[in-house]
Image (cartoon, rainbow, N blue to C red; front, side, top):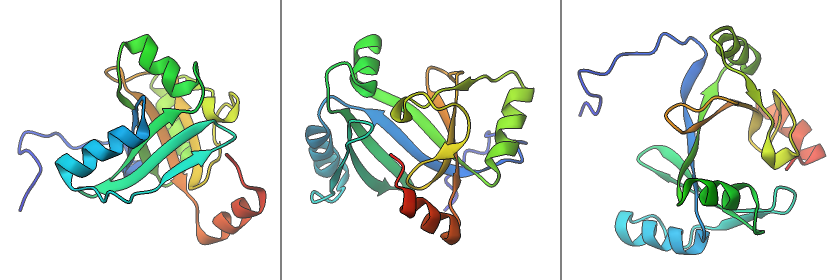
Length: 168
């Protein structure tokens, strides 16, 4: 079954491999997860992870081959709480694209006018830096109101190095 629209134009960006995940800013990760479980049959026992350093609670699950992240700030004024208040409601916070070489992806984006944004979960670190699944970087340019993240997923060797340090 072909799920792609015949009118969709393919991207000529050589750095994007796939959609890595979509992150949604929510007020209550438990309540949001219950809605996904009820309406879309996401497993009700999906774990909600707590990230002490970035002060977020995140429900992670896959739906239709796409990873979803339901992200809740643990503190008033936190990253996702502030986003919700600024926008007037919950919604799609950012899309993360898997790339094969994060430095090339960033160079391509910057050559086309993009600026880097500091990682709010890591205290404002700019550019490529380690996260639990890979090296990440954020653009300071929204695309239709949606933040853009790039991730170069770790090789098995890089994952071992990361686990020795434990990023966010």
